[in-house]
Length: 278
Image 1 (tube, rainbow, N blue to C red):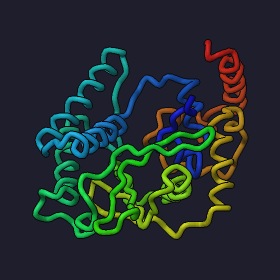
Image 2: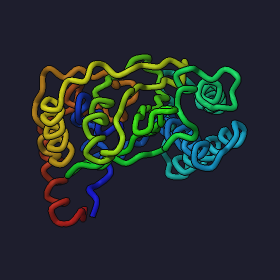
Image 3: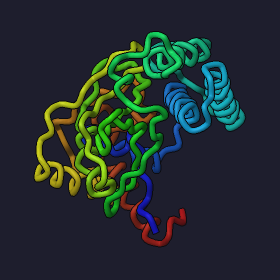
C-alpha cells in the first residue's frame, strides 16, 4: 500500500512553514473557506488536462470555471461562507481564471507565437502530476519537461497561483532530492516556480546537498505523521500566511490557547490509533 499522499502545500508547510495547519484542519472545521485555494486546484487541473487531453485555451478556461463554481456551490450548500484571498472579491474569480490560463498559454504552449525560450527548449507535451514517494510521504510534481535533443535531461516546474511573488524553493529542493530515488533514468537539470499571476519564473536556490535534505525529510515526515509534535511551543514562529489561514483565531501564534490545542491533538492521536473513528 502506498503511503498517504501529501499535498505540495502540506509538504511545504512541514518542511519550512506552518507546523500546525494540518492538525488544525482536523480539529476545527472552519465556517469559512478560501476561494484562492480552490482556484489554484482548478487552474492546476486545467493545465494538467491541456497536456494530457490537448485542451485548447477556451476548453481549459471552461474546465477551471466549472470546477471552481461547483466547489463554491458545494460550500454554500454546506453553510460555509467563502472569503477570497488578499482582499479580492468572489466576482474576480472568472477574471483570474482567464488571466492566469491565458498567460500560461502565451508563455508555455507551443501554439503560442510568444512562447518563452525557456519552454521552447523542451519537448511537448510535458508530463503532468508526476509522482514521488518515500516511506511516509507521497507527493507529486506539477510538470516535468524533457529537454529537446538531450535524452534523460528534465526540468521540473511547480505552477504557483498565489499572489506571493517569491516562494521558498526548499519545496523544489525536496523534489530534486527525491527524484533520482524514484525516476533514476532521468536527471534534473533545472527546477523553477512559474508564478501565474504575473508570469515570472523563480529558479531554485542552490541545492543544499543530500545530507541536509535527508535531515529535512526526517523532520518533515515526523511532523506530518505525529500531530502532537506540532503542538510544541515555538516562540520563534513567524506566520507569513495569516491572511489565508482559517484558524488564526485558535492558533497559539496569535490568540489561541496552546493548552486547549494540546489536549485536542492528543484526542486526535488517540482516535487515529483506533482507526480514525471520532
